[in-house]
Length: 133
Image (tube, rainbow, N blue to C red; front, side, top):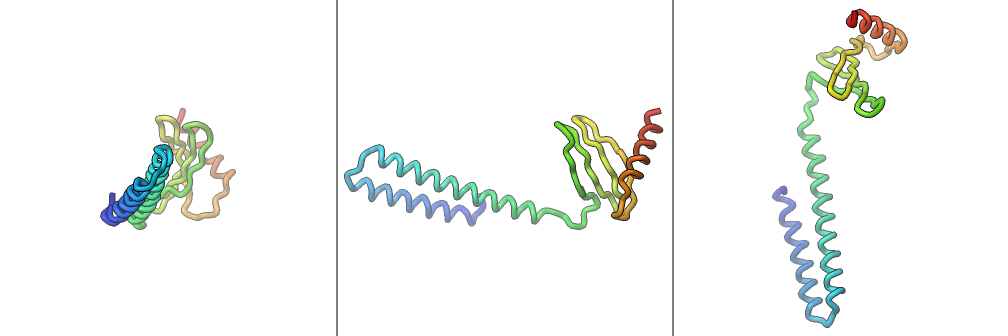
């Protein structure tokens, strides 16, 4: 837990406990006090989850390296445990087939962004047939 979150949690818990002590001074039923305590616990847990999510998102953005040599450009899921992945490594693009336990190079693409899909598919098919022979 981050140092900034701890004082906030302590403040919320102390407010809830003060409310509980004041409610105990009045004549309320045990069920009402239990529900109030449960509601307070849910609020505190909700705040903790929100703070945790924000901190995790902020830390993941801080650790991303924009000068990385390997970038995942796009991923398409085809079926369970099977997908295609377009990866850029040192300025070159590769189309990878991802299986349950395998990664297969399907095609090496040109650096230009205007790809002809049918020509790329033909080239990849020819390369795959040559590799399997």
